Image (cartoon, rainbow, N blue to C red; front, side, top):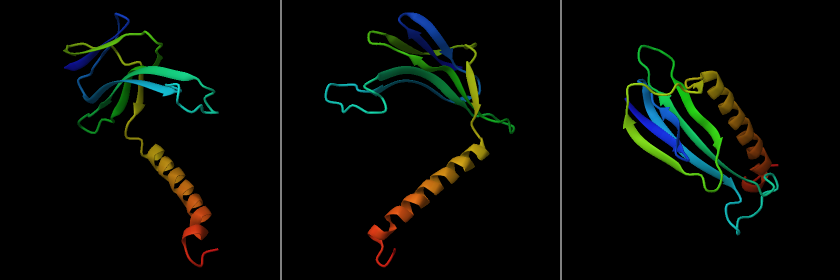
Length: 135
């Protein structure tokens, strides 16, 4: 199987892969004040967060439910850390540390309902500004 060997400061932190994956990714995210000219956010109080994530998505057959798999989730990084990723082919990978349903229709419906309600509220708030004759 295809897999990712992820090293942090020379140490292997994940051998990510599975026989039923269709997506496998590694990302580094930096959020916050990343440069001197970045506007400070009141909600973040000038803090910067840098994280490493390794995950995937299954594509199973025979009606088996698909899952999001995680090998590393929000692993904190600091300035000077070195992350290496190597694409490999292996027979056995590290067991994922987390899983969540990928085909969760109720969660999707709930999210769509929340977006609808927000859009509806915003529509009525702005309606008078853009529609002639609206109160």
